[in-house]
Length: 221
Image (tube, rainbow, N blue to C red; front, side):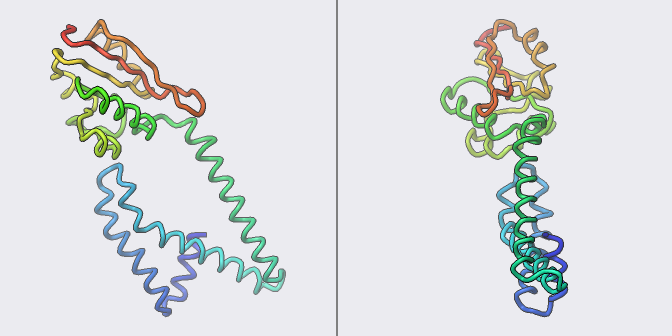
């Protein structure tokens, strides 16, 4: 529907309203391609969402109009067919996100729920070193590229890379959060810093394992 809307808008480019909509999309593409170089930048695409929704609406309207003009259906029937098609696509999309993607994908980078748990514990404890182990969302210097950490925890949570782990101050409490995609790191952490305690966190909607925390008291060698 979006592509049909784009084609219809391009076909009627002489109309000022279509020129404005096309200019909106082009500017977002030009500027957004630069801004999106940094991960976790959902807020940076908010400017393009209204234009994208308008394109979808134009695509639906164009599709219904073409059906009505074909002579096979009345305008009312064509409108209902377009509405039913959109509803089916919406149901398929919702099922994919909540029934397939959100249940089967590895947490790379961490989900909002995972990051919220870590950030809340950081805000509550205010002491110790917090390290998260996940495959994606962390650069070579240990910088965690995830918006909730940046805003809630003030960049105090580090990524579990050798440059960070090898320089940890063991005179402070250590809190290691290991996501499922890095489960192999947990035995190494326990061997490196014995004497800690384990705690698992499960997703609230279905009990799926979100991560495991390994907390090591200060002074443990």
